[in-house]
Length: 348
Image 1 (tube, one colour):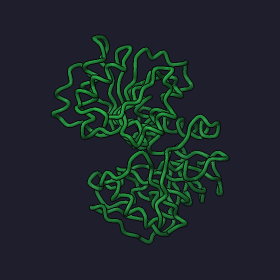
Image 2 (cartoon, rainbow, N blue to C red; image 1 turned 90 degrees about the horizontal axis):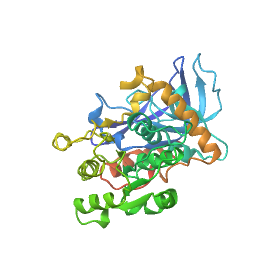
Image 3 (cartoon, helix red, strand yellow; image 1 turned 90 degrees about the vertical axis):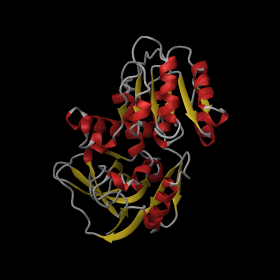
């Protein structure tokens, strides 16, 4: 089979490899659609060049000896383990059965491929980081607003969608102009939700002031789906100014905040850093991370089938696996806004 290996640059190269074999609890998927993510070009996070793909939708090719939920030919979508071999930028990939889900009828491979990494990251941030109630628990009694910065990014938009499923209001969503249409269709102004376009404000202070105006009560916490440029300054300033004097507000980030920013926090809790690998072999693997991933993937599939969850807007890059190079370059250069980049293997 052919797979794409990402080197520093990013520079991609095709490699011929045998079709992988699954371990006892694993699945080999024949890839139809794979996603590209910002982490894919950050080769410095990994010790050697790697097939960086993590999002996949396709057909089950072979299952391991312990797998009973899937069989060859099943349509499925899955999260490949971050940093492991046999990623999704290939004709075949390996996934763990517990972060694989059946593709509901009526849901396209493309839509499903936008979900795995981004929705898992959003779920980790909301339910393990911010510790808000999951949708199947009692209706949320969250008495204070939730701030989501970068709300039109894939992780940010899924955070909004999951927060709405948990009946959390009001949501203060911060986005650029590319996210206005998407978020306007999601948010519920009657429940106090509000969208702020950060480009409408001349200074960071002006944006923070506007966040304060949108807070009928002290902020509960924030999920920063950008975690770079101006977002750390805005989020910390808002939490410090508008979280009240009682409990320290919670903060979830996708990247580590700079040390000079961290030293400015007054009473904000230590940020919870989202690491999608926590559902496989990361920090939380001994604290229910795998079980969390298992539950979330079955709920993702259920909500998709019921119409209660949708994928992210996407763009399919031409050239199949050859399109990975340009996709990673555009992600690196900040040219992608409000959409997920996908490649279809059959177009290679």
